[in-house]
Image 1 (cartoon, rainbow, N blue to C red):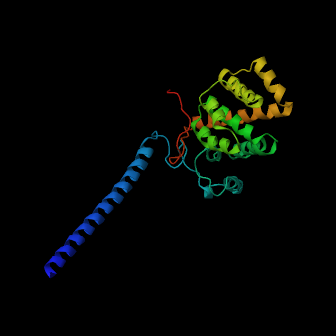
Image 2: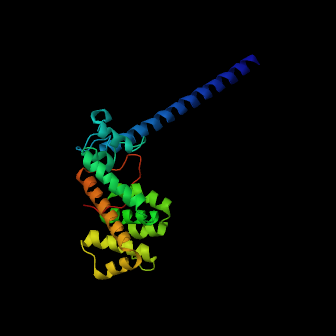
Image 3: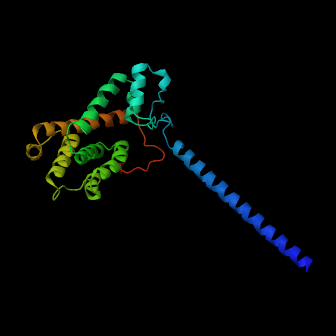
Length: 237
């Protein structure tokens, strides 16, 4: 009887050891896959792009800035990283200061509808094929009240027939001014009929602000963050 009990105990111990070994192998495999994924993400970047910024410029260190620079650095918030236009503009502090002020006014202080602000930004990102700006603002647009259907109209360049007047006016205006570099009399008249003079100037200035941002990002080949999923289909170059 004791031999039988001993045999049962040995079988149980062997089974437990095998289970632990398998678990350890799975954890190692999972860890290895994560490391491989991270390496693949880094390896996918062009040789002149820094992994910690996703752009052609290295991260600026706060301690290397003067007092005015440190203030601008801190104004980006405690969770800001070294990705994006704000980080790039720190290389030119006057540009960072003035463009941040313009962006803040247009987005938050001009009285523009937050939903339409996001729509104007997305139209600009789509027509400029800016993966970075689109991926950052599609979630913000949905949160601001844009429907997935409106987002798809912009993303996939669908017709604007049947949309609300203001939505269609912003989309058509952005498409023409960015893609064709000209706004037709008909498109202007439509936009002018649904927005006041100052509103229309502000929406156009907002699209101009983000067009400038896309130029900045494209110059320094800004990539999205490794943890982000690209949300905009970009045509092959």
